Image (cartoon, rainbow, N blue to C red; front, side):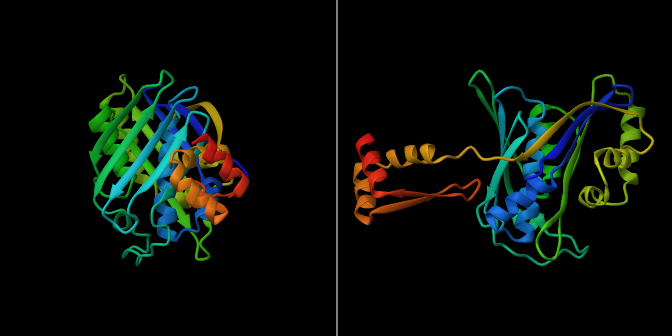
Length: 291
């Protein structure tokens, strides 16, 4: 699969930082693996892109897990991103379909519903920091901005979008984060707000219409000065394996494993990537011994 890109930089003479992600191929891979409806694709694509943005400030083996637990028909959306630019995720009900909003856009807010956003950061020292906030709209970008301000006291502006075509494939997906730094003036903040207000299209449409990241960034920044500090590849990557899932079977206990042996086979499916793993009777007997 072709990898997408994440760029990090500064703007307004170093008075603000930004992160830009093109995640079209990443979200399309998730859609293909999970067989999702358009609104489920949009919800998971936005959350996965948000996870890549939040994970961009991490290092080493650190990761961030985003959980949207709403009362909408999707029944929850989960995404995990790490410092290497790897991301994975799933929705609990991937086939949910809803009418479009009056604007013709996918109704992600209604699909997610009302509930809580939980953000967990796993750091290199083994510590895990978790914060939970009520969801603002279920549209995801607003919810992440609310989390960053209320839990981490970081004022932010964020754009997230996924453009799904009639044949269900992802034509464009991306995200853009701007955060004023301590030296930012009121004029800097007004300049950022003014530029964001000038954007005529959503970020997913801009991704789909741009030839490359340079062109996309130029459209987003307009006349504002900016500097690119780092460029990374990002993509859909799952950490599952047959060996890891065999450990899950071990945890079931000998009685349950014996029942599987009686059936002479077992199958496990990874929530995050929908990969199917088959265990034959010899493998199940070995797992029974380990248990």
